[in-house]
Each structure stands twice: as C-alpha cells, then as structure tokens.
Length: 99
Image (cartoon, rainbow, N blue to C red; front, top):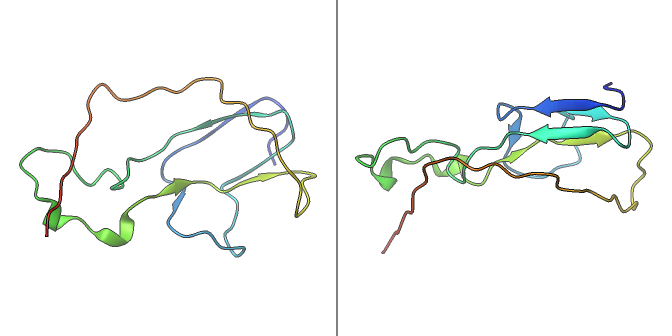
C-alpha cells in the first residue's frame, strides 16, 4: 500500500470493462496525490496517418487506467476527487468511420 504522498499509475495498468473482480493497480490512503497516465481511445494503436482504422483491434477501444483502491472507502461511499492538472499530447488525431 502507498501512504499519503504521491504515486503514479502508468498506462500499462489498463482495463476495458468494469468488474468487481478487477485487482487494484495501486492502493492508496485518502489524501494521496495520484498521477494517472492514460492511453487514447484506441489504446495508442494509431501512430501514423497512413494506418487504416480497419486495422484497429476493437476489443482494445476505450481503455481505463486503474482501478485505484482507496483505503477506508466502503461500498456506497462517495469519494471527492480533485483534478489538479491535465497534460495533453502535442499531437492528436480524428477518425471518421462511415458505413
């Protein structure tokens, strides 16, 4: 378990469906500052404008980083989360799919 302070959860700790069976990526005490590194909606599969959207593994779409276990939190509790900062990449992309 990580004490009060800072901890980073990198984007290798991803999951694609919520479940009570998920193991925590990290355990923290209330008040801990958690830096969360995320993947884009395609799990960083697109790295070049030459890539085709048809080559995407759709089972890896919309990843989430975590989960984060907060010590002392009980089912039904409401947790307050403060977003201190959001950094974004210098580059991005847009995908349009028509059928």
